[in-house]
Image 1 (cartoon, rainbow, N blue to C red):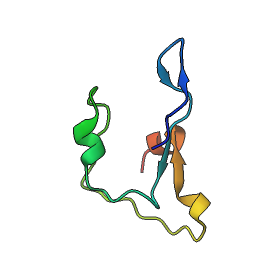
Image 2: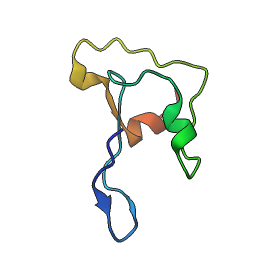
Image 3: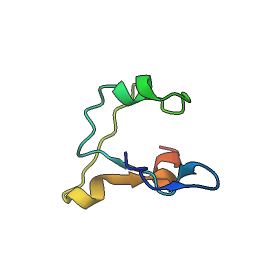
Image 4: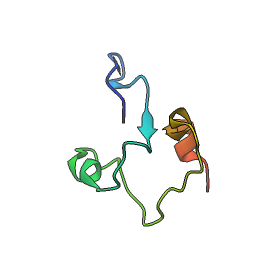
Length: 66
């Protein structure tokens, strides 16, 4: 997840991105999140992406119903 650039006014990430090419689905981010905002489901994401750039999901894509 990339959320390095914070919007200083709201203290929220200016950008949110999940890279399925790097995610191991280990759950460490879920355990480390102090706000409890990250939840992994038992349904593992399946991607048919052939390009690495297509494996990156932004917040809108993550909120779309499956």
